[in-house]
Length: 372
Ligand SMILES: Nc1nc2cc3nc(NCCc4ccc(CCO)cc4)[nH]c3cc2c(=O)[nH]1
Ligand SMILES: [Zn+2]
Image 1 (cartoon, rainbow, N blue to C red):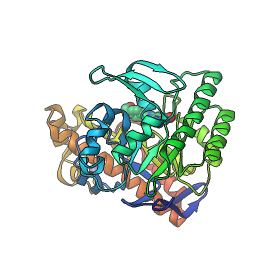
Image 2 (image 1 turned 30 degrees about the vertical axis):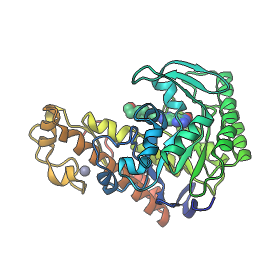
Image 3 (image 1 turned 45 degrees about the vertical axis):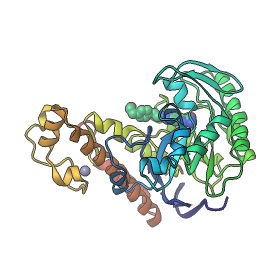
Image 4 (image 1 turned 180 degrees about the vertical axis):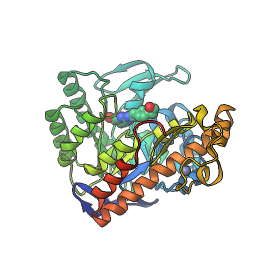
């Protein structure tokens, strides 16, 4: 695929560091993607998202097709222009969000009909319509249209959903066509069932994609089960293409995934939890609304160089959260995204230096158990 390429620059155990090159810019891997669901990373300006160190952000087909509409965004110049973010954008394909957000859903071989959670209007998503919507949005990395079953799911149900998703992966590939400079990623399904994961990986490799996502995780199975799937699942995917773990996660989830050969991740956690007063730091989590911060003159983290930590005390952050001031969500979101990008940068450097194991030991040693 001209215009889109992945170059591995170092490995350390199963971990890899490298660069994904796209016409809209480079993505340093391992990479964390902030989530910009409805055309905005909530409480952040695009230039602030860039200042945290993000090379790419994620948008959602489901949300943008319902409001303001993919055709409208296309008429206005595409999602990059619309949201004033000129670097790469990856868009999720909509199936996962339909199943978790919409009402009155009907799932058939053809696709999914559903009612919008915004205004109740009826919509249809299929591999073909999802590819068209992501083309209208102009996203650089397009996700295949898949079905991620809700847990708990029997082996049989997981097999059924995975095989449907593999038929949809072929249809996604066929509908995507040949789009130089744009990439299509397949999505592995199969729950926590090794045989199904192996079948899914083989099916995706036969179809052929520019990158491979591991779907069907971070859906309530818990960290231990997720990591045990990753223990074998990344080996099933081509080493020379990016591996994207969807929806992950807490900082220690991310570290565990990178150690197991994952190259890209996304999660709403740093932004969503930032808006609720949860700060993630190298020493653990801080719930800034807790009364014990009311008189604390110290920053969240005295070693952090983000605007929240260089400009404000815990006492101030506690106050503006208690007062419901908008700056509260802005500052904590910025800090959390900055912290997430910092651990990605430190892991990229550690992998390049062959010292990831030591870095991970230090990462865990620094983290207290609960709230700090
Ligand atoms: N197309 C597609 N998209 C996905 C998105 C996902 N996102 C997740 N997990 C996100 C879980 C998640 C949700 C909310 C919060 C913050 C509040 O707790 C954190 C994590 N798993 C996912 C799986 C898939 C998947 O198979 N296919
Ligand atoms: Zn900070």
